[in-house]
Amino acid sequence: MMKQVRRWVKSRCIILIGDGGFSCIGLAAECIKAGVTLISRLRLDSRLYEFPGEQPSGKRGPKPQKGERITKLKDLVTEPNIMNYHSQDWQTATVNWYGQRARLISYLTDVNLWHTPGEKPVAIRWVLVVDPEGWFRTEAFFSTDTELSAVKIVEYYVLRWNVDVTFEESRRHLGIETGRQSSDKAIERTTPSLFGLYSIVCLIALRLSKSKTLIPQSTSWYQKHNITFSDVLSYVRRHIWEGKYNKSVNDDGYVLFHINEWESLLDQLAAVA
Image (cartoon, rainbow, N blue to C red; front, side, top):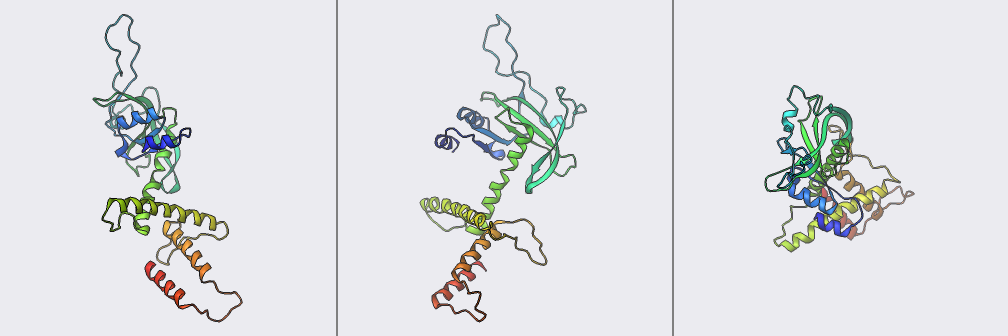
């Protein structure tokens, strides 16, 4: 997928963000070859090494691909000298966190070689993140772009939450992965179409919100403040119905529907009830 997108878009900066399943040296190496930045989660026991030093002149044999192994990330959190790793103190920063909230984190970062037996070492910038308040567990992330700042790496990784939400809401409201198609071709047709529908609904709502405010739906027992896709879907659906079954503002009486419109309205209301 990464290579195909790079063929389509040759000049733009591409950043591939994935969960722990994308934490693979082989994928990282291929991304570097294709000019794509990979950002993912990093295991706390990953094998990280220093860069190899200069080989003494006259020494025969192949040049070492890596230097000394550094302390495991999980041990850096518990070591007594945690505040002094390679003369680099732990730093604090406020980052954009899940739910569009700002959160204070403590982090340690460096550029090292990531190595797994059978693979060539890959240079990465790793970021070890600790929550000073103890609300979330210690995490580590990495980027194949070693010039990216630690804060940017963390904030880019948090963006992948939007992908998870898209899949969940598409499954709940549009029927993705719940269809009854029996053939692969049918699934290959419907799934991209439903994802496209998700995008179209969001774009319509964005356009309509410029003239009419989009307000989250809530009840007396559940006060919701953030807008979700169910609000967006209802907002767009209501606008369509309002245009189809519009009543004159000067008419104080009742409105007569054609029998076909009445049946259509009942079908649509029953389907979303």
